[in-house]
Length: 225
Image (cartoon, rainbow, N blue to C red; front, side, top):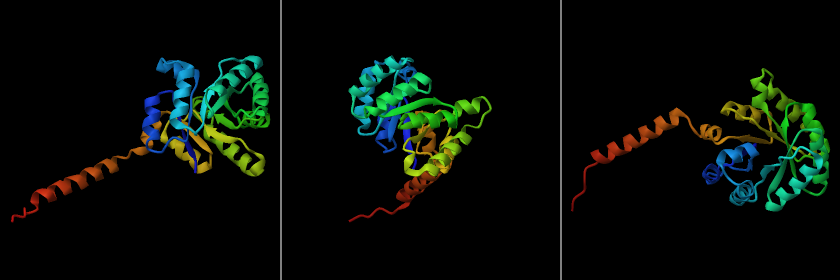
């Protein structure tokens, strides 16, 4: 079954959905943490504690090999379940090769083609994050890339170890389509996860049940001694 990750740095949202058993992991980035006005290190540590042992992606901000390796080792030291998030650039591939050989799991982000995903997996990434919503925004078929990646992974079986982590999910249909294709993980903002739970007929049905129950209680004759 496809795993659900929350793409957020908001601890309240993470606690809310984690209590429902819906959070298999969390992805963050510097923009999300800045949005919360929180300290980067303390936020990652708090999220890791809340969802432990599930993985939490903590992104580096450096764009050079040495900087990414240094930040990656630092981020991993914050918590056992940290996954280091690295951008899909040549220097990022070099850093991924080095860090993965140290046993540090890597989530390679900002993937926009199946070819990029293939080289990321080749470099040693544990998670591949294709951004489907941003592709849709420019008139390309984001979900088509997911279909290609899932087909490639199935063709290689156990030799293809990286998980396909569908990112830039914009709405529940993206989640459904990714699940139908067999993607390993979908990471989504809290508002999308919230929509997965809702249907107007559920609300109408519940109201009807409760109205009938309350009416029955009022009409039931009282029993006196």
